[in-house]
Image (cartoon, rainbow, N blue to C red; front, side):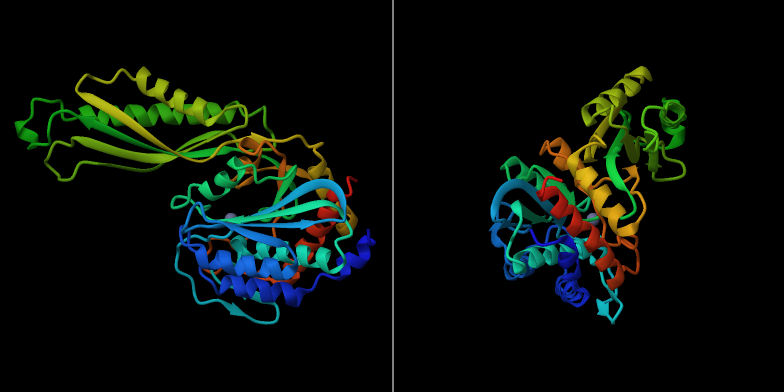
Length: 390
Ligand SMILES: [Zn+2]
Protein backbone atom coordinates (compact mmCIF):
# COMPACT_ATOMS: atom_id res chain seq x y z
CA UNK A 1 0.00 0.00 0.00
CA UNK A 2 1.29 3.50 -0.82
CA UNK A 3 1.66 5.65 2.27
CA UNK A 4 -1.50 7.52 3.11
CA UNK A 5 0.06 11.01 3.06
CA UNK A 6 0.99 10.56 -0.59
CA UNK A 7 -2.56 9.45 -1.40
CA UNK A 8 -4.16 12.34 0.52
CA UNK A 9 -2.04 14.79 -1.48
CA UNK A 10 -3.63 13.46 -4.68
CA UNK A 11 -7.01 14.98 -3.76
CA UNK A 12 -7.61 17.61 -6.40
CA UNK A 13 -10.16 20.36 -5.74
CA UNK A 14 -10.48 21.33 -9.40
CA UNK A 15 -11.14 17.77 -10.52
CA UNK A 16 -13.79 17.37 -7.83
CA UNK A 17 -15.34 20.68 -8.88
CA UNK A 18 -15.45 19.56 -12.54
CA UNK A 19 -17.28 16.35 -11.57
CA UNK A 20 -19.70 18.18 -9.30
CA UNK A 21 -20.36 20.74 -12.04
CA UNK A 22 -21.15 18.01 -14.57
CA UNK A 23 -23.59 16.43 -12.10
CA UNK A 24 -25.23 19.68 -10.98
CA UNK A 25 -25.80 20.77 -14.59
CA UNK A 26 -27.81 17.57 -15.12
CA UNK A 27 -31.12 17.99 -13.28
CA UNK A 28 -32.37 14.84 -11.54
CA UNK A 29 -35.60 15.49 -9.66
CA UNK A 30 -36.84 12.40 -7.86
CA UNK A 31 -38.25 9.87 -10.33
CA UNK A 32 -36.33 11.34 -13.32
CA UNK A 33 -32.72 10.32 -12.77
CA UNK A 34 -31.83 8.59 -16.10
CA UNK A 35 -29.62 11.35 -17.46
CA UNK A 36 -27.80 12.00 -14.18
CA UNK A 37 -27.28 8.23 -13.81
CA UNK A 38 -25.54 8.03 -17.18
CA UNK A 39 -23.42 11.12 -16.44
CA UNK A 40 -22.33 9.55 -13.14
CA UNK A 41 -21.74 6.15 -14.79
CA UNK A 42 -19.48 7.78 -17.41
CA UNK A 43 -17.50 9.68 -14.79
CA UNK A 44 -17.17 6.53 -12.65
CA UNK A 45 -15.90 4.50 -15.60
CA UNK A 46 -13.41 7.26 -16.46
CA UNK A 47 -12.26 7.21 -12.82
CA UNK A 48 -11.34 3.55 -13.34
CA UNK A 49 -14.23 1.46 -11.99
CA UNK A 50 -15.98 -1.38 -13.83
CA UNK A 51 -19.46 0.00 -14.23
CA UNK A 52 -22.88 -1.33 -15.10
CA UNK A 53 -26.39 0.02 -14.81
CA UNK A 54 -29.41 -1.65 -13.24
CA UNK A 55 -32.54 -0.69 -15.23
CA UNK A 56 -35.08 -2.49 -13.00
CA UNK A 57 -36.65 0.95 -12.41
CA UNK A 58 -36.42 2.42 -15.93
CA UNK A 59 -36.94 6.09 -14.99
CA UNK A 60 -34.59 5.77 -12.02
CA UNK A 61 -31.76 3.43 -12.98
CA UNK A 62 -28.99 2.59 -10.50
CA UNK A 63 -25.27 2.76 -11.19
CA UNK A 64 -23.12 -0.06 -9.84
CA UNK A 65 -19.34 0.21 -9.96
CA UNK A 66 -16.49 -1.91 -8.65
CA UNK A 67 -12.82 -1.16 -8.13
CA UNK A 68 -10.94 -4.27 -7.09
CA UNK A 69 -7.67 -4.13 -5.19
CA UNK A 70 -4.65 -6.32 -5.81
CA UNK A 71 -5.18 -8.61 -2.83
CA UNK A 72 -8.28 -10.24 -1.34
CA UNK A 73 -9.96 -8.29 1.43
CA UNK A 74 -13.22 -6.73 2.59
CA UNK A 75 -15.81 -5.13 0.31
CA UNK A 76 -16.63 -1.56 1.30
CA UNK A 77 -19.68 0.11 -0.22
CA UNK A 78 -19.67 3.83 -1.07
CA UNK A 79 -23.23 4.99 -1.62
CA UNK A 80 -25.31 8.00 -2.55
CA UNK A 81 -28.57 9.07 -4.12
CA UNK A 82 -28.71 10.70 -7.56
CA UNK A 83 -31.97 12.59 -7.12
CA UNK A 84 -32.71 15.97 -5.60
CA UNK A 85 -35.96 17.53 -4.37
CA UNK A 86 -38.20 18.90 -7.08
CA UNK A 87 -38.21 22.52 -5.86
CA UNK A 88 -37.15 25.24 -8.32
CA UNK A 89 -33.66 26.71 -7.91
CA UNK A 90 -31.67 29.39 -9.75
CA UNK A 91 -29.53 27.94 -12.58
CA UNK A 92 -26.26 26.33 -11.38
CA UNK A 93 -23.31 28.68 -10.95
CA UNK A 94 -19.65 28.22 -10.19
CA UNK A 95 -16.75 30.44 -9.33
CA UNK A 96 -13.32 29.61 -7.99
CA UNK A 97 -14.57 28.86 -4.49
CA UNK A 98 -18.05 27.37 -4.67
CA UNK A 99 -20.68 25.65 -6.81
CA UNK A 100 -24.41 26.27 -6.40
CA UNK A 101 -27.50 24.66 -7.84
CA UNK A 102 -30.22 22.19 -6.84
CA UNK A 103 -28.53 19.00 -5.64
CA UNK A 104 -25.10 20.62 -5.14
CA UNK A 105 -25.24 20.09 -1.36
CA UNK A 106 -27.71 17.17 -1.31
CA UNK A 107 -25.88 15.19 -2.48
CA UNK A 108 -23.96 15.54 -5.71
CA UNK A 109 -21.09 16.88 -3.58
CA UNK A 110 -20.83 13.43 -1.98
CA UNK A 111 -20.99 11.72 -5.39
CA UNK A 112 -18.06 13.93 -6.51
CA UNK A 113 -16.22 12.70 -3.40
CA UNK A 114 -16.81 9.06 -4.34
CA UNK A 115 -15.46 9.72 -7.86
CA UNK A 116 -12.30 11.37 -6.46
CA UNK A 117 -11.58 8.43 -4.13
CA UNK A 118 -12.03 5.88 -6.93
CA UNK A 119 -9.84 7.92 -9.27
CA UNK A 120 -7.00 8.26 -6.76
CA UNK A 121 -7.02 4.56 -5.83
CA UNK A 122 -7.09 3.54 -9.48
CA UNK A 123 -4.38 5.97 -10.64
CA UNK A 124 -2.05 4.84 -7.88
CA UNK A 125 -2.26 1.22 -9.05
CA UNK A 126 -5.13 -0.18 -6.97
CA UNK A 127 -2.61 -1.23 -4.31
CA UNK A 128 -5.19 -2.01 -1.66
CA UNK A 129 -6.80 -5.22 -0.36
CA UNK A 130 -10.46 -5.97 -1.08
CA UNK A 131 -12.88 -4.05 -3.20
CA UNK A 132 -14.80 -0.80 -3.40
CA UNK A 133 -18.43 -1.25 -4.39
CA UNK A 134 -20.00 1.99 -5.60
CA UNK A 135 -23.78 2.36 -5.77
CA UNK A 136 -25.73 5.45 -6.85
CA UNK A 137 -29.51 5.31 -7.09
CA UNK A 138 -32.64 7.43 -7.42
CA UNK A 139 -36.05 7.64 -5.73
CA UNK A 140 -34.57 8.79 -2.43
CA UNK A 141 -36.32 12.08 -1.63
CA UNK A 142 -39.80 11.69 -0.05
CA UNK A 143 -42.62 11.99 -0.81
CA UNK A 144 -41.99 11.29 -4.55
CA UNK A 145 -39.23 8.83 -3.67
CA UNK A 146 -39.85 5.69 -1.65
CA UNK A 147 -36.22 4.45 -1.55
CA UNK A 148 -37.03 1.65 -4.01
CA UNK A 149 -33.75 2.30 -5.87
CA UNK A 150 -31.58 1.35 -2.91
CA UNK A 151 -33.99 -1.33 -1.66
CA UNK A 152 -33.88 -3.04 -5.03
CA UNK A 153 -30.06 -3.20 -4.91
CA UNK A 154 -29.98 -4.51 -1.35
CA UNK A 155 -32.65 -7.13 -2.09
CA UNK A 156 -30.51 -8.36 -4.99
CA UNK A 157 -27.48 -8.70 -2.74
CA UNK A 158 -25.62 -5.70 -4.18
CA UNK A 159 -23.94 -4.81 -0.89
CA UNK A 160 -20.59 -4.71 0.83
CA UNK A 161 -19.59 -5.72 4.34
CA UNK A 162 -20.05 -2.13 5.51
CA UNK A 163 -21.18 1.10 3.86
CA UNK A 164 -20.44 4.79 3.90
CA UNK A 165 -23.30 7.03 2.75
CA UNK A 166 -21.72 10.22 1.43
CA UNK A 167 -24.05 12.77 3.03
CA UNK A 168 -24.94 13.96 6.52
CA UNK A 169 -22.74 15.28 9.30
CA UNK A 170 -19.00 15.89 8.95
CA UNK A 171 -18.41 16.63 12.63
CA UNK A 172 -19.71 13.40 14.20
CA UNK A 173 -20.06 9.69 13.53
CA UNK A 174 -23.78 8.94 13.40
CA UNK A 175 -24.53 5.49 14.81
CA UNK A 176 -28.31 5.64 15.19
CA UNK A 177 -31.40 7.49 14.01
CA UNK A 178 -35.07 7.75 14.79
CA UNK A 179 -37.59 6.22 12.43
CA UNK A 180 -40.10 8.48 10.72
CA UNK A 181 -43.44 7.88 9.04
CA UNK A 182 -46.21 10.14 7.74
CA UNK A 183 -49.72 9.30 8.96
CA UNK A 184 -52.92 10.44 7.30
CA UNK A 185 -56.09 10.07 9.32
CA UNK A 186 -59.57 10.50 7.85
CA UNK A 187 -62.47 10.68 10.29
CA UNK A 188 -65.85 10.30 8.57
CA UNK A 189 -69.43 10.61 9.82
CA UNK A 190 -72.04 8.48 8.09
CA UNK A 191 -74.59 11.33 7.81
CA UNK A 192 -74.04 13.30 4.61
CA UNK A 193 -73.31 17.03 5.06
CA UNK A 194 -76.49 19.14 5.29
CA UNK A 195 -77.69 22.52 6.59
CA UNK A 196 -76.92 22.98 10.28
CA UNK A 197 -80.66 23.40 11.01
CA UNK A 198 -81.67 20.20 9.22
CA UNK A 199 -79.54 17.70 11.12
CA UNK A 200 -80.48 15.26 13.88
CA UNK A 201 -76.78 14.79 14.69
CA UNK A 202 -75.04 16.70 17.47
CA UNK A 203 -73.21 19.39 15.45
CA UNK A 204 -70.28 19.10 17.87
CA UNK A 205 -69.89 15.37 17.30
CA UNK A 206 -67.13 15.51 14.69
CA UNK A 207 -65.24 18.47 16.22
CA UNK A 208 -65.50 16.73 19.60
CA UNK A 209 -64.04 13.48 18.26
CA UNK A 210 -61.26 15.34 16.52
CA UNK A 211 -60.49 17.27 19.73
CA UNK A 212 -60.29 13.89 21.52
CA UNK A 213 -57.79 12.60 18.98
CA UNK A 214 -55.68 15.76 19.24
CA UNK A 215 -55.71 15.49 23.04
CA UNK A 216 -54.66 11.82 22.97
CA UNK A 217 -51.80 12.53 20.54
CA UNK A 218 -50.66 15.46 22.65
CA UNK A 219 -50.59 13.27 25.75
CA UNK A 220 -48.64 10.54 23.94
CA UNK A 221 -46.15 13.13 22.72
CA UNK A 222 -45.67 14.46 26.23
CA UNK A 223 -45.16 10.94 27.62
CA UNK A 224 -42.54 10.19 24.93
CA UNK A 225 -40.67 13.37 25.87
CA UNK A 226 -40.63 12.44 29.55
CA UNK A 227 -39.56 8.83 28.91
CA UNK A 228 -36.57 9.78 26.75
CA UNK A 229 -33.93 8.05 28.87
CA UNK A 230 -32.89 5.08 26.74
CA UNK A 231 -31.41 7.01 23.81
CA UNK A 232 -29.62 10.12 25.06
CA UNK A 233 -27.98 10.52 21.61
CA UNK A 234 -31.38 10.97 19.93
CA UNK A 235 -34.29 13.41 20.13
CA UNK A 236 -37.31 11.88 21.90
CA UNK A 237 -39.95 9.94 20.00
CA UNK A 238 -42.73 12.29 18.87
CA UNK A 239 -46.22 12.75 17.49
CA UNK A 240 -46.79 15.79 15.30
CA UNK A 241 -49.87 17.16 13.53
CA UNK A 242 -48.91 19.16 10.45
CA UNK A 243 -52.37 19.75 8.97
CA UNK A 244 -55.99 19.35 9.89
CA UNK A 245 -59.09 20.31 7.87
CA UNK A 246 -62.79 19.79 8.32
CA UNK A 247 -65.94 21.25 6.89
CA UNK A 248 -66.38 23.26 3.70
CA UNK A 249 -69.00 25.93 4.49
CA UNK A 250 -70.01 28.07 7.51
CA UNK A 251 -73.44 26.52 8.06
CA UNK A 252 -73.04 23.02 6.66
CA UNK A 253 -72.60 20.11 9.04
CA UNK A 254 -69.01 18.87 8.60
CA UNK A 255 -68.95 15.21 7.58
CA UNK A 256 -65.25 14.51 7.32
CA UNK A 257 -61.99 15.54 8.94
CA UNK A 258 -58.57 15.11 7.36
CA UNK A 259 -55.49 15.09 9.59
CA UNK A 260 -51.86 14.49 8.68
CA UNK A 261 -48.61 14.51 10.59
CA UNK A 262 -45.44 12.65 11.46
CA UNK A 263 -44.55 9.98 13.96
CA UNK A 264 -40.89 9.57 14.95
CA UNK A 265 -39.66 6.68 17.09
CA UNK A 266 -36.50 5.49 18.81
CA UNK A 267 -34.60 2.29 17.88
CA UNK A 268 -36.43 0.26 20.55
CA UNK A 269 -39.56 0.45 18.37
CA UNK A 270 -40.26 -0.55 14.77
CA UNK A 271 -42.62 0.76 12.11
CA UNK A 272 -44.95 -2.20 12.78
CA UNK A 273 -44.99 -1.43 16.49
CA UNK A 274 -45.84 2.25 16.14
CA UNK A 275 -48.66 1.49 13.66
CA UNK A 276 -50.11 -0.97 16.13
CA UNK A 277 -49.86 1.57 18.94
CA UNK A 278 -51.71 4.19 16.84
CA UNK A 279 -54.48 1.68 16.09
CA UNK A 280 -54.86 0.94 19.80
CA UNK A 281 -55.01 4.65 20.57
CA UNK A 282 -57.89 5.11 18.11
CA UNK A 283 -59.68 2.04 19.48
CA UNK A 284 -59.38 3.40 23.02
CA UNK A 285 -61.36 6.49 22.02
CA UNK A 286 -64.52 4.38 21.53
CA UNK A 287 -65.87 6.30 18.54
CA UNK A 288 -69.67 6.30 18.01
CA UNK A 289 -70.98 3.73 15.52
CA UNK A 290 -71.72 6.38 12.88
CA UNK A 291 -68.11 7.56 12.84
CA UNK A 292 -65.15 5.81 11.27
CA UNK A 293 -61.44 6.63 11.46
CA UNK A 294 -59.09 5.32 8.76
CA UNK A 295 -55.35 5.75 9.08
CA UNK A 296 -52.94 5.42 6.15
CA UNK A 297 -49.17 5.30 6.61
CA UNK A 298 -46.16 6.17 4.52
CA UNK A 299 -42.88 4.88 5.94
CA UNK A 300 -40.04 7.33 5.31
CA UNK A 301 -37.42 5.28 7.17
CA UNK A 302 -37.29 2.88 10.09
CA UNK A 303 -35.18 3.51 13.19
CA UNK A 304 -31.80 1.81 13.61
CA UNK A 305 -28.74 1.67 15.81
CA UNK A 306 -25.30 0.16 15.27
CA UNK A 307 -22.58 -0.37 17.85
CA UNK A 308 -20.03 2.38 18.44
CA UNK A 309 -17.40 -0.37 18.29
CA UNK A 310 -18.18 -1.32 14.65
CA UNK A 311 -15.01 -1.23 12.56
CA UNK A 312 -16.39 1.29 10.07
CA UNK A 313 -17.24 3.68 12.94
CA UNK A 314 -13.78 3.27 14.48
CA UNK A 315 -12.08 3.82 11.11
CA UNK A 316 -14.03 7.04 10.60
CA UNK A 317 -13.13 8.27 14.09
CA UNK A 318 -9.44 7.39 13.80
CA UNK A 319 -9.18 9.04 10.37
CA UNK A 320 -10.90 12.22 11.51
CA UNK A 321 -8.75 12.46 14.62
CA UNK A 322 -5.56 12.03 12.65
CA UNK A 323 -6.47 14.80 10.20
CA UNK A 324 -8.27 17.22 12.53
CA UNK A 325 -6.25 16.60 15.71
CA UNK A 326 -9.39 16.18 17.80
CA UNK A 327 -11.76 13.30 18.53
CA UNK A 328 -14.86 12.65 16.42
CA UNK A 329 -17.83 12.13 18.76
CA UNK A 330 -20.50 9.49 18.11
CA UNK A 331 -23.97 10.90 17.75
CA UNK A 332 -27.54 10.08 16.80
CA UNK A 333 -28.90 11.57 13.58
CA UNK A 334 -32.27 13.30 13.68
CA UNK A 335 -33.41 12.92 10.06
CA UNK A 336 -33.95 9.83 7.91
CA UNK A 337 -31.04 8.85 5.66
CA UNK A 338 -30.10 5.74 3.70
CA UNK A 339 -28.06 4.32 6.59
CA UNK A 340 -31.36 3.00 8.03
CA UNK A 341 -31.87 0.92 4.88
CA UNK A 342 -28.33 -0.50 4.88
CA UNK A 343 -28.73 -1.53 8.52
CA UNK A 344 -32.35 -2.78 8.38
CA UNK A 345 -32.60 -4.30 4.88
CA UNK A 346 -28.92 -4.89 4.05
CA UNK A 347 -28.01 -6.06 7.56
CA UNK A 348 -24.64 -4.30 7.34
CA UNK A 349 -23.22 -1.46 9.46
CA UNK A 350 -23.33 1.94 7.78
CA UNK A 351 -22.14 5.44 8.63
CA UNK A 352 -22.78 8.87 7.16
CA UNK A 353 -20.07 11.21 6.00
CA UNK A 354 -21.14 14.57 4.60
CA UNK A 355 -19.46 16.86 2.07
CA UNK A 356 -21.22 20.03 3.22
CA UNK A 357 -24.89 19.18 3.54
CA UNK A 358 -25.97 22.32 5.43
CA UNK A 359 -27.71 24.09 2.52
CA UNK A 360 -29.47 20.95 1.22
CA UNK A 361 -33.15 21.67 0.37
CA UNK A 362 -32.55 25.44 0.93
CA UNK A 363 -33.61 28.18 -1.50
CA UNK A 364 -29.93 28.68 -2.30
CA UNK A 365 -28.06 25.38 -2.28
CA UNK A 366 -24.26 25.46 -2.60
CA UNK A 367 -21.04 23.84 -1.49
CA UNK A 368 -17.52 25.26 -1.17
CA UNK A 369 -14.54 23.57 -2.82
CA UNK A 370 -12.70 23.85 0.47
CA UNK A 371 -15.40 21.72 2.14
CA UNK A 372 -15.26 19.16 -0.68
CA UNK A 373 -11.54 18.66 -0.09
CA UNK A 374 -11.81 18.65 3.71
CA UNK A 375 -14.50 15.95 3.71
CA UNK A 376 -12.76 13.95 0.99
CA UNK A 377 -9.57 13.71 3.06
CA UNK A 378 -11.43 12.06 5.96
CA UNK A 379 -13.43 9.81 3.61
CA UNK A 380 -10.35 8.64 1.69
CA UNK A 381 -8.44 7.86 4.87
CA UNK A 382 -11.48 6.01 6.29
CA UNK A 383 -11.69 3.90 3.12
CA UNK A 384 -7.98 3.04 3.30
CA UNK A 385 -8.14 2.18 7.01
CA UNK A 386 -11.22 -0.01 6.56
CA UNK A 387 -9.84 -1.92 3.57
CA UNK A 388 -6.52 -2.45 5.35
CA UNK A 389 -8.47 -3.90 8.28
CA UNK A 390 -6.89 -1.41 10.65
ZN1 LIG B 1 -29.79 13.60 0.53
